[in-house]
Length: 157
Image 1 (cartoon, rainbow, N blue to C red):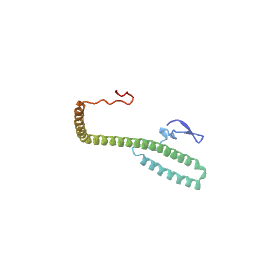
Image 2 (cartoon, rainbow, N blue to C red):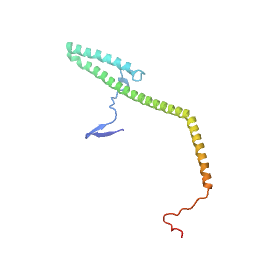
Image 3 (spheres, one colour):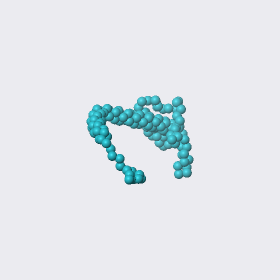
Image 4 (cartoon, rainbow, N blue to C red):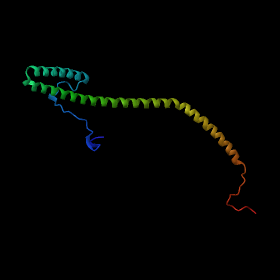
């Protein structure tokens, strides 16, 4: 599902809440193969920035705005990176589910192909006994049949 919907009377968007991060604002590599390592590096920077902010508030409170901007930028980068990571994980999960489904279907085909000769033999055995029963039926069909009156017919007098 896409677009907007209403849940308990409140409008809700089904779109993921994206935090746009401009290419020049990234403080890490969003194209890295291991986004977890990038996220940990950002987390370390955020901890350092938080300590610097506390130190600034203790020693020179008037300069806190620059530290807050840096902390805000780090948090925005972390949110953007988490959104990228979520999309990658969702894509990887769908691929894994599709691969598992293909593997299950291949196993089913292999099992069906392995069981096919036995089923064909059972069918031949069954059709052989059915044809002999039909031959018996042909022999009884050659015998003269007596006509029985139907319930609605008048009896011969």
